[in-house]
Image (cartoon, rainbow, N blue to C red; front, side):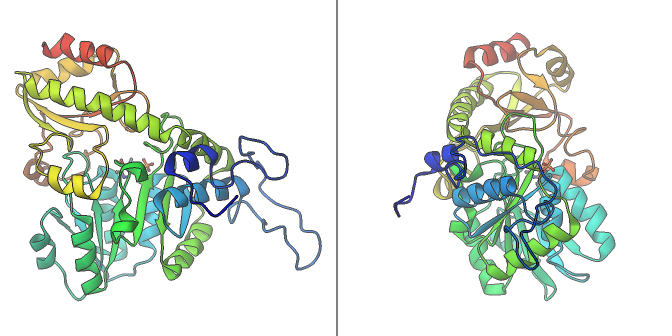
Length: 383
Ligand SMILES: *Cc1c(COP(=O)(O)O)cnc(C)c1O
């Protein structure tokens, strides 16, 4: 291959290596082997044992790394396993500032799991730099943000926060699950570590769990490699291959689901049964201006609040094309009830303060025909 850098869509389709160099296989092979034979003492093919290193996992790691424009990527069995690995960078007494509005499972990790090991966390509104500054102490080691956030689509300014982190020698960790590198590249905006639940848009078909960490700094990467191998929640060869396959269509899936999402957000906004729509693609959304500067798209996650709580049960029961299910980022449109599903472990007072209440629903818009999706919603909400 010549030196010319390939474009995003081309890298997603070809993968890092463009196929198998040995056989010419266009679809990268699944190296379904736990272990690898050594030619002689002190010699290795580069592969020893699949927890440590596996060619198919290496291929997906290299591909994601190119897409996020980092130095190295690490693949894990789930998104929370990737986040957990990240936490091994810290020690008891360390303090981390976290976006208050974020994925419920991440909240639970901080609040219920790490706190037991002495890692302290403060949940703050990271859309305001002043709010963050107030909470930085001598123990603070990192800032962890999600942007847009789950479920309220709040937008934090990655460059501004990165500047603050550099000044205070803090590690900036960004969960980029909602926009993916197709729309947003946090490392280029100054983040130190990017996290993905690959289960969502990267995999894209609601059929594989996975997680990724991408970083630039050699020291961070080597520490994370030791954690990945030692704690062992690595991505299997088959699941790595499913990710490689999902990535091939990342750009067209995201374009199509965003196109559908814009139409659905506008429909919901006009609908008399809806009180508020949270979508970063709406010009009156609070984070619209910051998002448009730091990303190239809005994605396809929409939350909305119905006026009457009775509409929640009606929607969840009557929708037929749209499935009532947890998760997001797949080709199928899903509707979720954060209050009892994704955010069930968040304390009630925080949920109320944020507005994650009994009237909030979240849509992950897929790539179905827009008229079928709109008709489904109209069957319950009316024109
Ligand atoms: C789903 C999700 C996670 C957790 O990933 P899993 O693959 O379910 O472990 C983390 N962050 C965000 C934003 C998510 O949506």
